[in-house]
Image 1 (tube, rainbow, N blue to C red):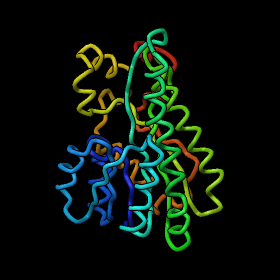
Image 2: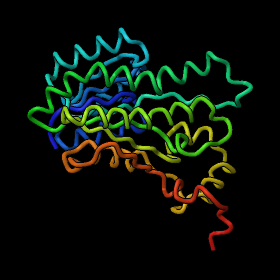
Image 3: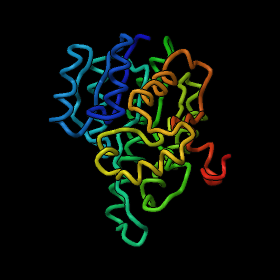
Length: 254
């Protein structure tokens, strides 16, 4: 696969793993993240194949500036990966409106703003090549659980936004799909998931393990590629089977 990809939240985790896969496939990548120090360091791995863009996707003015720079530097966009997100877990009673908005402005507003700002470039690219959007939601957008009133709601909204994009942008030749990762061995998960939490996830997952960042990146890159040229408006849960066994107890499987 060749062309240009824009990956938000690219400084670490799934975004960085996705960037690595795109570069390995011969693509140029605009790596976007608001954590400038970490982003610049991560981009050094890829040399001239990437450009590090330090912008905050939750701020409309910054998103507009980012889109203009991408058009100037690359002139096209084959794949937009809306991966930037924040996790703030807490119960409903203790989730202030400020905490709620902090989650929504990145996880949901950012997807809307970046997609809208890059739409003209995606549409122009689609006239002669493939163009697609892949939004990163979460299994928390499909399965309710405690402490995720803001996070889970934001990710459920991303899933619906993906459907809206697919319905509206298909006539322009732009596909829109969504990946919902389940438990993944990110640095954040390794830091905050206790042995008891990890054991509980293993019991709940048919594959009995956490996924890797690269496994999720593989799903993202497939949906962004021309191999998925007739796939749009779809949700792919890269979750080790978590969603498939959402009803019932692991102890009752046998």
